[in-house]
Image 1 (cartoon, rainbow, N blue to C red):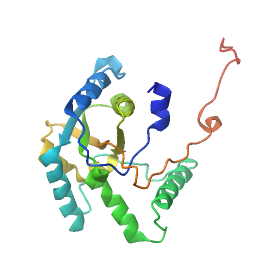
Image 2: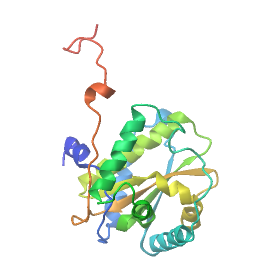
Image 3: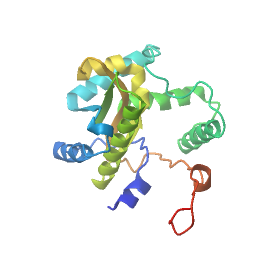
Length: 227
């Protein structure tokens, strides 16, 4: 699979089979991902890969918290700005509408939407999950490094025939994740990443992207020689 196909086919999959992901594949992917760009070569990411009985226990403990009405742990960072301005607000709304429509969930069906969100903490049935942490002393540049690392991981997973789903939602139950993975002191959980083989029978959606002209501005002549 070439890199363009990996980018084109990568999406947040929300339905996995239970087929195990071989450890050697995960090792190969994460070893290669270590070559991701990193300012001053800090390599600020700290990843914990969870499978088997520990992952089952994590899912159970989190499900118990959700079922008890536990709203989750206090925020260590905000997922989105409190007031999203245009066009970001519209893009977020459109993505949610596309996703729920694909799953046959009506806008007014609050209970069905709640159940759909709760599937995050089941890893959508995935048999493997990666939890990515960052030292809390790091700044914006290192958060950017972390994003590039995760994108590299996801593209390499596609090259292996696997899919994934990045889930910032796991930060809501970070204390339960910590009970399982025992992260080093001073780390902040950024997200989880569910990993596995896609369940082709599950509902799926590929959300739209903004036209190139909305996000890219070319400065210079067409031949690329600059001005």
